[in-house]
Length: 182
Image (cartoon, rainbow, N blue to C red; front, side):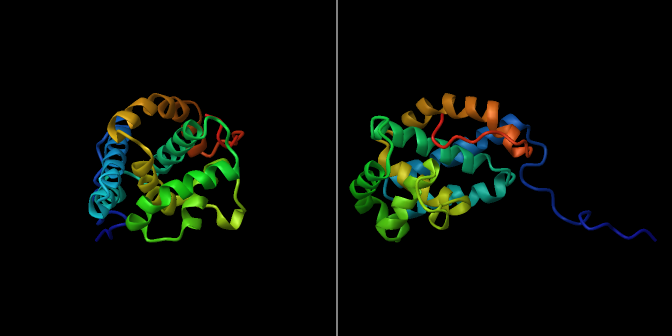
């Protein structure tokens, strides 16, 4: 009698059978939905797409990469390319009142979200992974005037970066990482 190996009894993941392009599109759609929900100041509409993201696509770093790069692009535009800790903390101060009800964290947490993509905060205060995705999408929803149109406007830049560097980084290639260089 043949014994099943470790993974044979596991259900197929939701993304099984999807092409890389379909997975990428699903990442974009769910992240945009989350950002739009945050823009509407709806805790549930912000978090529900992120919950779906956790099971709908592989944990391959694309979603976090999208949020990371959107934060860089939006914040650089917001501070007119004058990226420095003081300017980013000022944006956090202006954004915090709308962001706090969605996330329930102190202003220093939002400052850390804004400083992290530029590697301007101490290592022990860097925001990464799921925390960056949840806090970052909430911040993007507050910062963007028309989230659907604005995300679509930034998408070509993010997709180009992913095509050039993201896939290589995901595969473990040793690439030079320049914070905020998009």
